[in-house]
Image 1 (tube, rainbow, N blue to C red):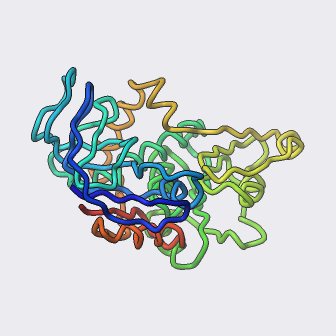
Image 2 (cartoon, rainbow, N blue to C red; image 1 turned 60 degrees about the horizontal axis):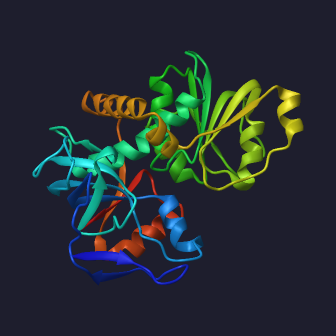
Length: 305
């Protein structure tokens, strides 16, 4: 089979031929049909000190199952998070990280919806939204952000603002139902909001906090870091919460599963609309990464084995 690797920080990415792996206890061997490309995985290539397996979200058909697997069998369609080599023709998924793909949904739908949707839904839950509150989503055109914009409205926000880097992204976010958009480079991000879902961090963490109204909340779920002064929290009685999806998956599996069911229900009834920016063959993984690095994507970027 083919898989994508790299030998040093920054790449380049290349294809190599390796044997198809054997599933161990609790694992599924999946023939990959779609693989999601995410900023955290792109950052592994550009920032990790040593090469690491390119894993992440994928969807496909179960080929075989290891000892102890009870929920799936050969022929089942699944999606899930792979912690090993996921940029490949075949990949191993642990049963606990896999979920069924329902009839009426494709593998591309699955990778555009499930993992990104879980992060968006979890970050939103961490903000403790109340009906009628106002919301702002940074990276609003991203794979996670464009779902967070929709979910904030579904959860009762009276006004949803998307923060983006350029006019094309602003138009895209408004097409998803955002009431307004702001550009990062603007001096002001408009009227303060009750909560902010921040996927950017870094130097934009300050403006994101400034966009929070007194008594409001900011949820940070970015790997971009950033620093906040305690005084900025005290003076506005604001709060900041960090959110990590892996912790929910590990420590609260029932909640994780409930959120997955909710996402599929919203997708199948047309309430939630994941958007795919582009689909690339596995051999063009570097091009797919380039789209993410340049922040050009409007929605999800997907690889096809």
